[in-house]
Length: 478
Image (cartoon, rainbow, N blue to C red; front, side):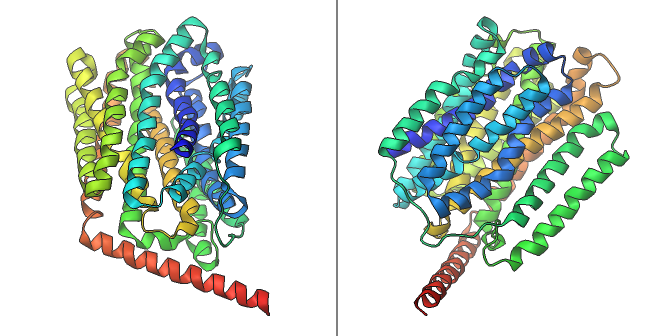
């Protein structure tokens, strides 16, 4: 339980950093005279680098030691947080956010791998993951309030200071209490695969964010879109030919694993878009200060805090199906409430929409994580957890990029405040569509057929791992 608490501290500072930052966006935009795309980059620069490096960090931790990589991540993240608080320009802030992400990439998947190898009983693991998910709820509950209070009283730079004491405490406790662990067989690096992933995510995100300003058919946007497509083809062709790929595409033969990956992308795309829209609406359209905007977002965060541990217990006792169905229904209902009924224009419906989304997001996290690591060989726990974490960050990156691009296209030709509600309607339909995808995929990938594909995939992976270990031992003996 102490190891779980230490790992949850790392998740707290990473999750809190994002929720606090959302509340601070309008203040940062005023100080730096930033455009809508500039605000998008302060979020997406972090999630983009995080997504690109998570699988590398997970496999590296399996190879050289999980505690060692975890401690390096804590150090880099904490130092980069201090640098963010001192950033003199928007460009330097984005650069320091990218450095933060380098450290953050060594935290969540590695911590989840530590938890997976500490809690070996499936039910205990599911409950531990439920606690892990509850920390996300705590960060969502505390983030808007803490961020709003700090922004209004001290200034937006102070939001990065809170990472310093938590990061230092986690670092000292890790050094004292977390045991070292690594995979029985070290996986070799895959630099080509890593470059392809960076090219894919970076080019795709850049094209989406910059398209409203540059034009969707401009040469620059088309070139970046072509690079993203080429990188995707390269991954699909190159990775299966490697004995130890960065992305083991065999994982995706498991329907629950594939479903969890897509559900993570859809669920966190909805979250990224939801927070981005809510922050801009509450402060720029309603004219609320950061603290009162944070208070308005508290119902969503509170529901996530309450529902995440409940979801973990349900996954442990009844499996992932029910939590995924509840998550899909609630997230879809929230999106439709905003898209079809302009929920933000009435206090009552705005409150209801936040509650519904909080319930939905609270239920979605635990089944994603548990499905991703359950049934996989423990030797590859770091890689499996990293794929799940990568999917979350890809989803949040794409959510902010797509929602911001659609919103920018809708408000470009008229007054920002007066056009916001109309322009955001299409954004809310996108969020509702993400919730519907969670519902349908949750139903499809949690049945008997899906569980059988997971069993067969695990057997193949274990047989291949045993054969590789035997071959390495034979070569060493000879």
